[in-house]
Length: 173
Image (tube, rainbow, N blue to C red; front, side, top):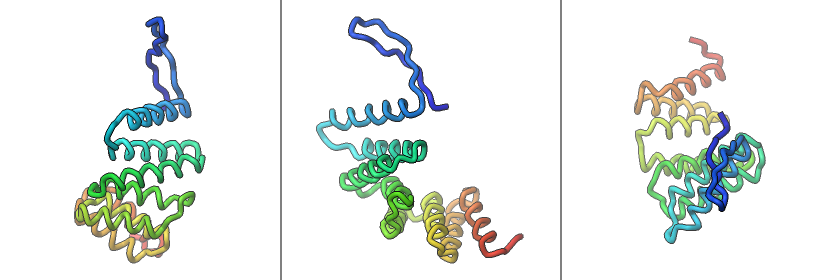
C-alpha cells in the first residue's frame, strides 16, 4: 500500500486525520529526512543513505530522472562522510547501474569496494552478478553468482542469476 494516515495538528491543537498517498507520501518522507539532516549539527551518513534510498524508490515509482540524480548526490554525500559500510557502497553501485545515471565503471568499483568490506556477502556478490549480466559479461556474472551461493546456498537471488545465465547460453537443465 502507498498511503498513510496520521493526525495533522493545527495551531489550535486540534487534530484532523489526513491521508497521504503515493507521491505525497514520498514527498512527506523526503521532507522529514531533509529536516532531520538540517537539524543535525554533525552530518549523519545514515540519514543520507536513507535519503538516497527514498529517492531511488521515488524514481522507481515516478520515473522522474531528477529523483535518481538526487539519490546519486545523497549517496555520494553519505560515502564522503563514511566509507567503511558496505551498505553505502552497494547502494551507490545499484544507483549507478540505472540508465538514467549510467556510470558502469563506478558501479563496478562500488560493488567491489563493498565486497572488500564484506567478502562473503551473498547480496553483494549477486548484485555484482546482475551488473555483469547487464553489461554482457556472462562468465563474470556466473563467477559472481557462484560466490554468492558459496556464501549462502539458500540465497535465492544467486540461483535466479544462474538460471538467467543458463537461459542466455541456451543450457536448459
